[in-house]
Image (cartoon, rainbow, N blue to C red; front, side):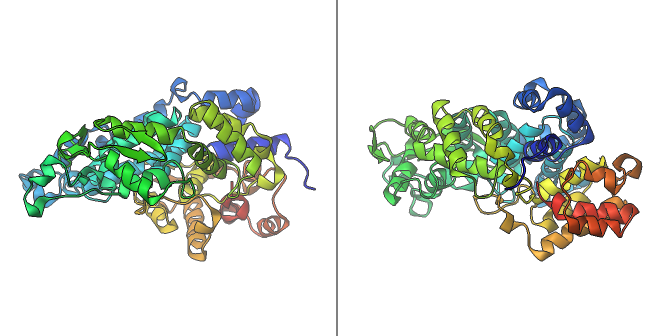
Length: 470
């Protein structure tokens, strides 16, 4: 039987799971406050000053603009009213918008003091994934991140579900903005080449991926009925203002039956809201969300007992995300030895944690984003609605691991433009190991480190299995 984690290992494990990796300042603060008090702070991010990262993100002009402003200032160059008047950034068009969104995510992962919050923003961004390079989503994803995901990342699940359902970015990505009842007046009298039908994409994904899960007990008939409920949920000027609105002329006003629950005729926009309420409070949703959260924070195959406990808190708290997270982090399973460093870091987690643990200074640079792409996680560019996976097998191919090794070597050798590594701040490999695997480096890692020194030893430590995992 493995011994329990000692206090230093608990601190490092806690920070590895609830942040994008420990920094020396974080470790000292957790030691001083205790894990429980530090967790209280992190679950109330609005009370944490975050001026450093806010100043850095403020340098990214597109992050504060509306969808309309983004389209006006960063059009496709060939669509601009006067292309000769565009500056170099505007000439890049929507590519610049996506690039700045990616940079903002990376800057926040590295520098934010609200680390648990940023981890949950990343979690929900994958759970409610959209593909930022699809059509109008090139301009709609920035408001989606800012106005839909971030305000609700630690709130009530139902509010988050409704916000995503009414987000122009989601409506465009899953094509619900085009969904119309073929029996509605607008469709019956439309020219043949402009008639649209019911699109089931969102009706399926809201149950399979967002709430109930693939084994959540719904049928194809439920998919069709949910799709009928969401007809008329569309976008006003998808390539303009991009706002959500309900179009009654294309809605299916008939009676629906969803998961055995009757939705009376004549409900209009309330049909979709009724579905959101039904799904948000369904027992299968509690089980599905609890499974995904425990997979993120405990193990790829989380123990059934903690999944059940988290699901029960989800139901009892009406989907309070903070309450569920507290239950998971304070559970004995969280600190069980078998779950210590059991998770492989996703590329964003790996890259951000390397910058954080070494104290490397990061400027606005494209090179780090290129490395993320080569590692397999170009931010906001996962094409399938599942987002990026949270399981080891997706991130341990030989090519991906070699790229991580190359990144570690480039980082400690200061070969990354826009990133400055200072060995005086990072310390030597022996000092750094205390913040990676206190008293728990494997014999093989110790042997390799014993044969190297200087920057080579630091690079090997950052490429070691102990650092690849969290």
